[in-house]
Amino acid sequence: MANFEVNILGCGSATPSLRHLPACQVVDFRDNLMMIDCGEGAQLGMRRQRLKYSRLSHIFISHLHGDHFFGLPGLLSTLALHGKTGTVTVHIFEQGAEWLKRTMDTFCTDRPYELEYDIIKPEHRVILDTKSLTVETFPLYHRVPAAGFIMREKPKLRHLRGDMAKFYNIPVSLLHGIKEGADYVTPEGTVVANERLTSPADPSHSYAYCSDTIFDERVGGSVRGVETIYHEATYIDADKDKAAARFHSTASQAAMTAREAGARRLILGHYSKSYTDESQHLAEARAIFPDTIAATEGLRVDLTESPAD
Image (cartoon, rainbow, N blue to C red):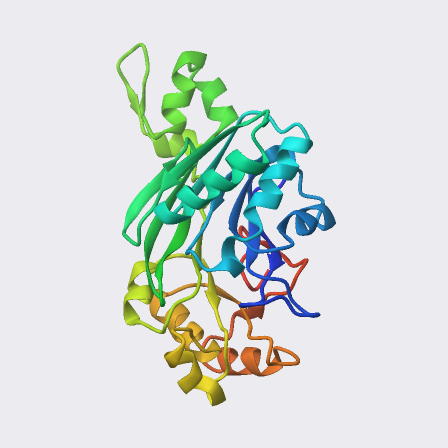
């Protein structure tokens, strides 16, 4: 079972090419699947990477450009054909929700699952809060309203030392509280510090998705402290004027954002189809932020591993 990993289904921009599909990725958090953006080819990408439709419960759409959500009707229809049950929540801008409702009510009315819509805006807000994970939005700066997403694993419980629990004969009813950090008071009134009874919790991890955006220092501030950042890198430095005019970023600008944020790892994506490979993107980004990798379809990144692992 995956703990926390990102699967790249598409990392191209604007239109599909023979090398890349439009933007789409699936985050696997403890075997629960969450899709971020849904360009054309998303459902085929899931099949190729053996990601189960039945485990998909949330879809996050960063903005209303077709290469980021035109794959949605097809995917949602396929989920119905496969007998998907439960609830699928689409987190999307209001106009996109209105369009999608009309489309699904026309072409896919017989759904065995509940389809819900969560209206998002380009703002700092927690939009999903589960027992183990939060997802929050933050503003991006593109030609249309756009939002990035941060997934944060909540702090984990400390590890109980079995030998100490046995030595003090601690009641089972108190063990969870001790894992949460409580001290233990013996029947005689002696306080046993939590540090003697437990060892530190495993670290929690975080992931940020920075979709289409012009380079802006506010993005780095929004994702400061996040471990792994995916950032659009549509162009290389030679085309930085084109990037600015179209409200996109270059690979080196993505690297500057990751450096500003204090990230541990950067994943580049959303490449223009005008390039024959991403070697220049990678070289320019690594000159600023060495722990950079270039996304490609089929790539899986274990977010619990450090870049040096």
